[in-house]
Length: 98
Image (cartoon, rainbow, N blue to C red):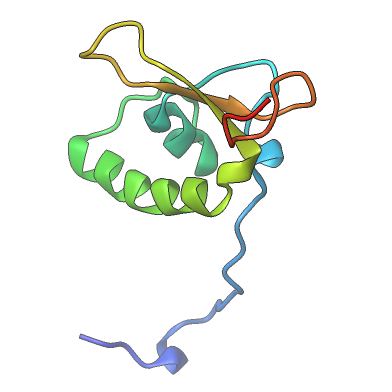
């Protein structure tokens, strides 16, 4: 059910950080690790599946909206996730064109 705004003491603007504020430019991360970092958690922190699903619900659209800031590496095996990192001058943009 909707809740009246008057019920809340602290209303803030919804602001998202830029990818370079979240990720180390020299590292590659799984989407699960990025989801944790995006929320200020440690990349290896254990989460219950429901919480991880919620974090992914926020992270995946953020990554799509900032896709030009990322590069992608294929997973080592079919049952592993891919890895994402920041696009830099040396890695090119997220377009796959060099």
